[in-house]
Image 1 (cartoon, helix red, strand yellow):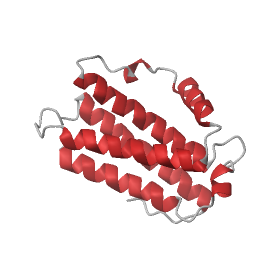
Image 2 (cartoon, helix red, strand yellow):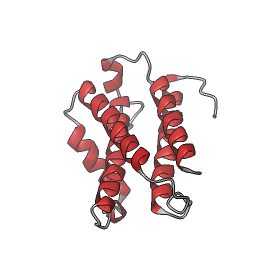
Image 3 (cartoon, helix red, strand yellow):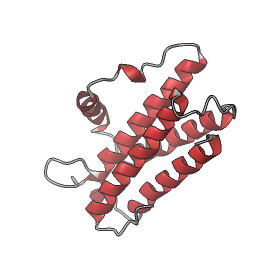
Length: 154
């Protein structure tokens, strides 16, 4: 995918997530989605946390540093630590982080050159962003299932 196609997919998958949680109350946002499962709030925090890591990676690359996102090997432990950091945040704070992190990411991506080598599938730029697209998609499907929504597999 080229730059514009990736941006389009980022927007599409995020819109799907937002539609899946449309109309949900703050109380419902805090309820676990099943036994031993995260809440909707936790899920949004999780998406924001990973997206924040990708934003950080782009910022590190821009400074000539090695991105540290690749140092995360134990995803379960990292996810648990990130969830613990957000445990006491309000739904509003999580929504704000979720939205602001995406805005920051899109600003970075929009500012990147359109050089086709940068967007080649094997390059980290493409890999990071495609991972975020798939991540939103994965959690969108889980949110649809939890809310008993008929979310067509776009």
